[in-house]
Every structure is written in structure tokens, then in C-alpha cells.
Length: 98
Image (cartoon, rainbow, N blue to C red):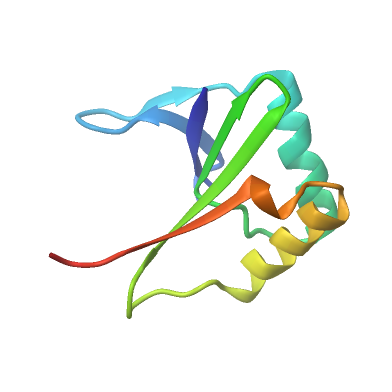
């Protein structure tokens, strides 16, 4: 399972076109996000959260040459690592214009 985390509108999406499909997160996944957020002290959550059983993956997408990790995302990542998540729970995808 997974969702796109729309931090600006505080919602979780599993679809976007033609209409956003807004979902509620399961309690455990919501608790994970809330816990990391409380430790980070600021926004900065990665774009996508996926999970299966006890495995969680956070994915951040960046546009090569136009986008980079923000300080708030670095703080969020550090808070998640400090909370016990392993580095293998995070993926940064860099995309290019074709």
C-alpha cells in the first residue's frame, strides 16, 4: 500500500487524475508520520509513503538541475533516522526532462 503525502493541504492521495482520490491513512502509518513530525519540529515529509507488513519506504522526487533537498527535509530525514528507521527506508528519485 502507499500514498502521496500532500503536505500543503494535509491530505493523503492514492490517485490524482482526473480527480484526487483522498484517503485516510491507517492508524499505524498516521502514528509513524506524526511521531517523525513531532521529532523533526517542522514540515519536510517525503512525497510518498509505502508500506507492507512491517516495512516502510519513504520516497522523495527531485527534478534534476532544478530541485534539491530542503533543510526541512534533511531535518525530517534525521528525525526519522533518530527514531530508528534505517537508511534503507528512504529513497530519493531524481528525474530529468526527456
